[in-house]
Image: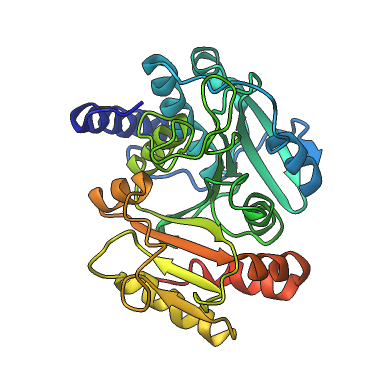
Length: 327
């Protein structure tokens, strides 16, 4: 399920070209971005966080279905077009039709609390992931686009619903990507824990999830925060571990988030400066982000912290606000 670097760069280039065409169609004069959002009055599906949880992480007894090249390419185009629509304040989903058929995804307009989002969902339960884009007119001077990811929602217990709450209820991020199949699920329908597991989207460059991430990064400056979780261990002595996936340094963005979370009373460690594990050095989305010069922050949270965040609205809001204040 891996793809060679040349093919990945080629797909990223095609995605960038597709974005240029999408933006050109959305602008009123040359390269000038349209300033007035055009939002149709179409009805959005009203959902709660509980509905999102049931829809995405219901542990279906299905087999992993690896995507074809054509399906991945179609999803890349979908992500490019859906993110452009959302960032222009549009929810006109009809333009996505051709790519939907080619990818096997469906597009829905959802309203979850205060958030209106374009959702790209997999009706066939192939383990293809789910991708949400906040519909709002995003000023160009607002800085890098913000992508929140929960790639191990089943294994890292609670990270999926926690990320969903931060995105939908607290306005954290411009897009939210998550997996929809356990990282250790196999093509034969069994669950086997092993390195480089075929359903682990953080390890497989041939996955839908990785293709969607590449398309989002190709569309312009972006920052990724991936939310992960670890079991409480006394010897670790940490609420959270921060990393950029680099064994040599944690970097300036991690340092600023480290300070921000420490100021909120959390016991945080940085990889590799403070701790020698949970560093995400084999994370493929982190590797891709560094390749294109994008920020990548890998946030590991203890089970105790995840429980506190689930129960404490103020603490969860503080984390949601802190994630992106890292320019």
